[in-house]
Length: 153
Image (cartoon, rainbow, N blue to C red; front, top):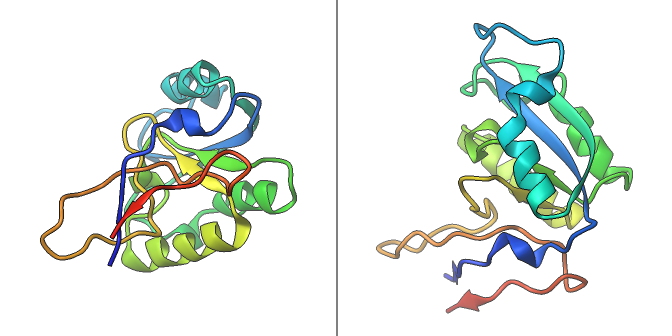
């Protein structure tokens, strides 16, 4: 089994179109502008020169299944329709918490050739760690147009 070697987020070039997705607590007081709650993520996107084309926010527990979230399919559709090349979220746990969510998202990433990135963690859900190996982190980047992922065997 292969381990993924850390690849810096700069591998995704400036000008790349992204959607911002977040799953925020339903107990939090929603603001009129979700961008206020997502300042850190939007700053992360801006620092990389990426272009946010849409923001989708679900008000649900991060423990909830993505199947129960109304905004999540819209984020995926933006990529599938070619309006964006990747998804940026505050944390990976907002994208998957349950193993079945992780597995289906990994399959979607492979099929869509999209990438996912977060300010705090750059873990590729398509790669599993070998037993006893160190955790390796990466950004799941688009195919060769922006560079390929390096792997250790």
